[in-house]
Amino acid sequence: MTEISRLPGPVLDLWEWQFEGACRDVEETLFFHPEGERGSARRRRAEAAKAVCATCPVIKECREQSLKVREPYGVWGGLSEDERAAILAHPVKRAI
Image (cartoon, rainbow, N blue to C red; front, side, top):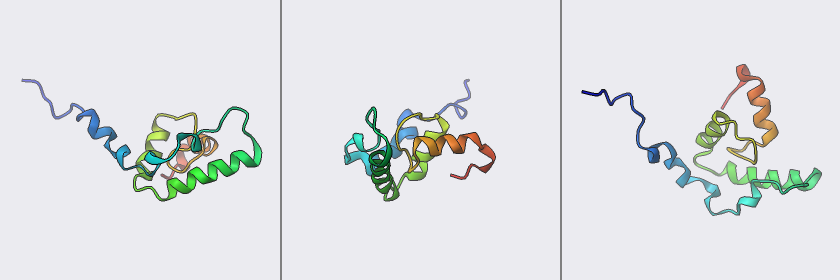
């Protein structure tokens, strides 16, 4: 008989945390910069996205997932693209 204890759980179990995200009812453009956005406009948008993340009950799960899959764009788990890149560049210092 096949050993099923090592099989992954249902896919929904892996992603169910997303249903609790504070960002679910927020326009996605807040989390992803439009092409050409730079300087203070980009910084203000990212800070507004991070403010939503700061209230999120699943920020840790979101952050862990974005680092695990090396999410290249947007604000995830309260981290910008550059912040995630810096964490991934120094995995020893990685604190989630």
